[in-house]
Image 1 (cartoon, rainbow, N blue to C red):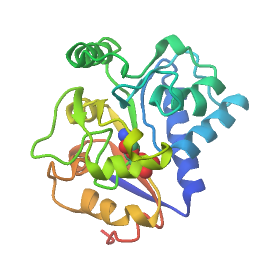
Image 2 (cartoon, protein in one colour):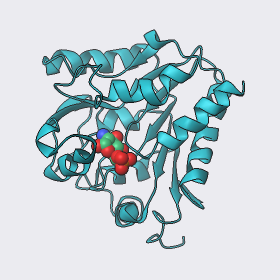
Image 3 (cartoon, rainbow, N blue to C red):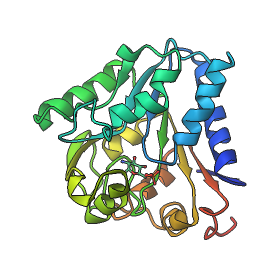
Length: 244
Ligand code: GLP
């Protein structure tokens, strides 16, 4: 695992965007796995700028997002589909028909999840998966558990995640209690993984995930076993790491 320490949030975002743009330039019809949350917003802003400047062309790529809240329609302003449109898809030359986010408005979990895994398989798998990191070490919505879930599945969100994400809703009671998420197996199947992490409040999680034992109680720790994983942290998020 390659850990890159950026000076600050802006530099972290630029490094992550350059990595993604590089992948798209090398493989114009690549399959990107995308993430939501506050952390990748700067990365997407850099990619929007790069696209406007003609430095990257998204017209042939396919994307799969990690997760979606169960019960929110794509036009709900807190749905992850809405987030992706707002921060990336509406501002670049992407073919929206080839952008995928699990359908949170469909209550048939089994159908949604198996169709999602099948679509990823049919697309040839994910070339580069972008990830944020939850405060409890979750990736996508794979919450701390006693085993690593393999495929896309429905998950009950933990109280900590509900509280953390309530800042974006009117109050915590509005936060959906469940989500559809790619599994750890789906994420580990990506040919390359890129994690972005920012802020002092994630420093202990970064230490546990990337310099602690690999265990499902800290889901992101599994990334230590990935053959091609890069973590880009700003200095604050990296502040508890010990030098190798
Ligand atoms: C959410 C998302 C994750 C994201 C995490 C961290 O719960 N499901 O994919 O990585 O929160 O979000 P943030 O970047 O806002 O801290």
